[in-house]
Image (cartoon, rainbow, N blue to C red):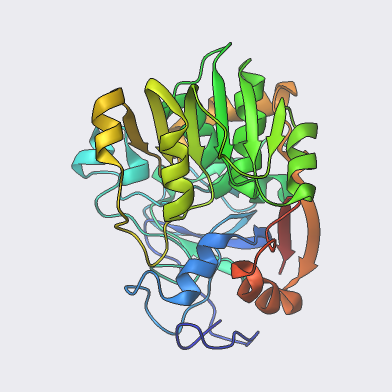
Length: 331
C-alpha cells in the first residue's frame, strides 16, 4: 500500500475487506503487475482515496458472498474486469459496462488485489467464471491487459484478415494485441525500443518488428498500447487514408495532448478509444483460449511474491521495465 502519491510502498497488515451486500470477497490467487497501477501511484488519477492498496487484474476463489448476490457461491473460481459496473446506468443498459457511469475499480476506487483478499462490487454483473483448464496465473492478466486488447482489436478496431496492424508498445497489452490481431489473419508490425519485447512479439505472431514508427505508412489499424503523446501521434501518422487509430494506453499526466487534427481531417481518419471489456462479452474470448487459438499463458514472464511487488511496481516508469511479458504476483 501507499499513503501518498509517489511515496514509497510497503507491505502491511490491514483490516479484512468487508463484503458488499451486492458483491463478494475473493481470495486472490494471482494478480497482475500493471502499468495502470503505476499511473495510480504516481497520482495521475488524483481521485484515488489515500491510503491505497493497488491491484486490479486478478483471479481467485470466492470466500464471502453478499446477501443480495444471486448467481455466485463460495468456492467459485473467478476473474473480473477491472471496471466493475453498477449494472443499471444508461451505459450498462446498452451493454457497455466497460464505460459504466457509476463504475468502481479495485485498486483505484477502493483497496485492490495486491492483498490476500479483495472486495468486488455487483458480483452478478461483473464476475466471470473461470474454466478449470485456465490456471490462475493466466487468468490474472485477463481482467485488464488481455481483455482490453481483445476488445480493442476485435470489437473496437474490428480487425479483419489481410489488414495491416501496427502495435506501438509491446508490454502486456501490446503483446496481447499482437497475438489477437495475428490470430485474425492480420499482418502485424510490432514497434518497441526493446529487442526483448520485439523478439517476444515476433514469437507471438508479429510479421515484423521495428524500434520506431518513423518509416511506417499505409497502415489499416494502428494501436497505441503504451500511452504517451509521442506514440499516439506516431500511431495516427502511420495510417492510410480512412485508417483507424485505437488509443488503449493511458496518457498519464498528459491526458489532453495535442492531436494532429489536420491530418485526421485530410485523411478521414477514425480515432477510437478502448477501455477494458464488459464481463458479458468474455465467453467469446474464453472460447478462443480454450480452443488454443489464443494462448495468453505465453505472455507470462515472471512470478513474484507480495514482498517483491512494491519495488517492481514503483520501477514500472523506468525505460524497459515492462519489457518481455507479464509479471504476476502471488499474495
